[in-house]
Length: 295
Image 1: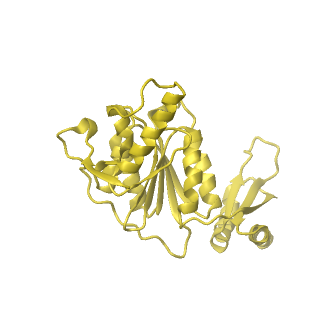
Image 2: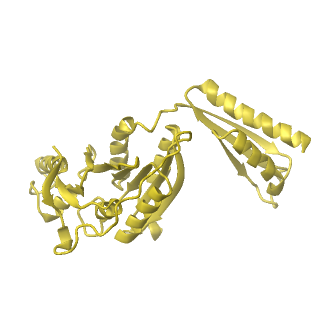
């Protein structure tokens, strides 16, 4: 099962199905971790009416699986803004682009149309998505949550996916997730905005992404540097970051009005085993102590 022959124009009847140029190709660095960008979609996020919990969850999940999240972007329910964000992520070399939000049946849910434009393909009724949506509404009717099952114009919108993409089962809701893999190597995944639906689809998808590898073990070390001046630490930390690329280093400055005598420096690493993670952070910490002693 897959894409039906019928293209979907929805409320763009009489207009071009896709006005975008072909999607850019990605050339990932085979030596480095896969690069990822998370795009949170929703005007309510940009207006501060809703707190985004999806992006932190996805960023942590991606990091545990060896990806490097290079950017988290928030855009409103604007088709061009979503399209531009997806294309920028691909052009920046991200091999994995994940969006959350905007998959519903209402007019302000524009993610799939924007994704199709970003990839340079039309929307079409997807037979797998159609079966998923019909089954979901049938279950809701049996539970007497909706009066009628079957499809209408609004529900049909949930079944229109970018041509060539795959429908992802949503066990916690109605709208399917979507995955599109480009010839150049990039993968775009569209997830719902509701956290429980987003997590349900994501948990069923990660195992199928060959670019990700579970790194279940992590380690952390923290030390207080004997200075409140970050400019003193920067040359040392820049050197350590180059020597230990797998270690995430963060500084926590208390500010000059606090009684703390120094800046806290945190070293974190994820690896396949606890021993490997411990070795990485211990090495980075010892290197800082060495540089501080000779600096």
